[in-house]
Image (spheres, helix red, strand yellow):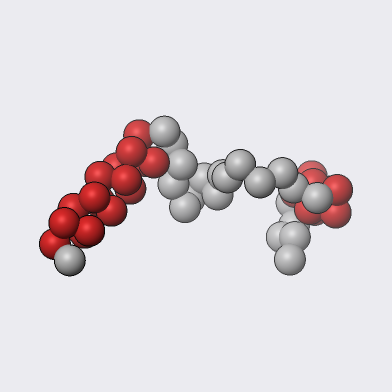
Length: 46
């Protein structure tokens, strides 16, 4: 399991270097129209 943890940490560091952190909440999935409107209004789209 030690090797898995090592590679997971490297993967997380790679994502951080790209700016893909939980605080940024970015992903490659497009938002639905309803979600885009909620973002414009400053609300959460659930």
